[in-house]
Image (cartoon, rainbow, N blue to C red; front, side, top):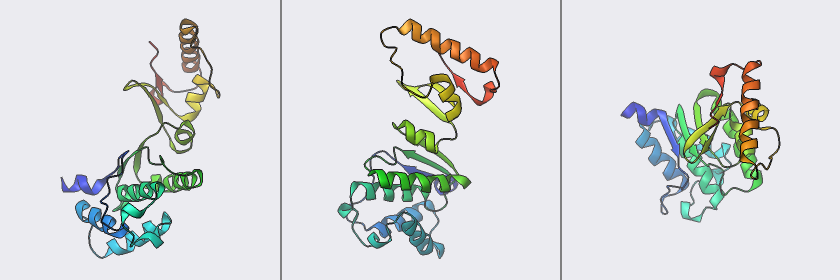
Amino acid sequence: MVQIRKSLGLCPQQNLLFNYLTVSEHLHFYSVIKGVHGKMTPTEIDRMLATFNLLEKRNKLSKSLSGGMKRKLSIIIALIGGSKVVILDEPTSGMDPVSRRVTWDLLQHFKLDRTILLTTHYMDEADVLGDRIAIMVKGSVRCCGSSIFLKKIYGLSLLDYSQDIDAFITFLKHMFYCFFLGTQNFSDSFCSIN
């Protein structure tokens, strides 16, 4: 169980912050829970706060932070201690566009030495951050593949097929079969068309 806590980081959709803990107290608390307390903790906390532009907020209570800053703190909590598997549930919700883009760049950097599972409603975010993207409908994975694969299947723009669902399904099946007769390896991607 100790090894799992060290290896796993979680940023839930709702911020799980304590109103009367400071930013740095949160990070120290979660470091202790992960079992990574010690000499490196203050150094890592300062580094992470600087990376996410929260260093000047280190002694502020979490209740005084803006929504975007709370999301950044939640992301840092997930990453602190070198978590090898990080689950981020809509990490940029509540952020302004500039902070959102900066966070994308940081997550691109942090994903180099860990696995990040990210959920989002924003296709642009999935396109930028995802090496592999899974599209879910009503709790079931319907399609999974690289951004390029999904763009080949669904095109670059949204098409309205709501008036003729049979034509839409036929179109998707055609695209699916054409694609797999081409150059893409089936084991890398899949689609389920019912």
